[in-house]
Image (cartoon, rainbow, N blue to C red; front, top):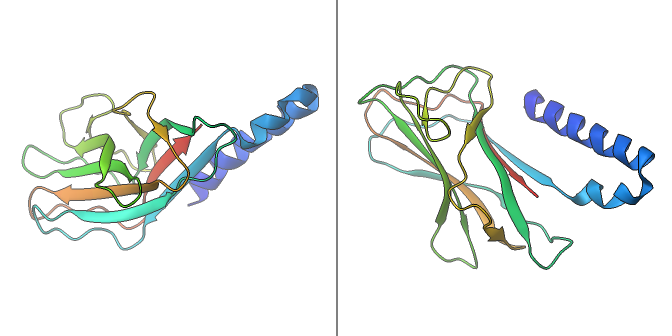
Length: 168
């Protein structure tokens, strides 16, 4: 979790410096928000079973347009390489007013690298996940979710893996 706090502290320091230099930059303080969800217990290895977590609830925005997804990423404490048959599929999504979950990003752990959508998760490295719907507006109260589905026995998400969503 220290990694997420380091990112957040660095971003806030940049905003603080901008505010000191440019007083009109006060609005930047609240111009972004970040959700980081740590998968504390790891994920079991039952193939085809989807494990679902709520990452957070989208807060009120300063504008009527809501929030845009700026970045999705995954961080694993150990390398998750996957293979042709041993994979984990991560799906970021959101639900509005209890409706069905709408996917906003997907990543599959595998040895075949496709930037932003598939490949290994390298230990302690933030791996970007491609946002599927650019320009999507999330509204206050939308629930951000993460689901993980293993494709075969023997695969597991290690305890301490982090799913991160940044909104702007």
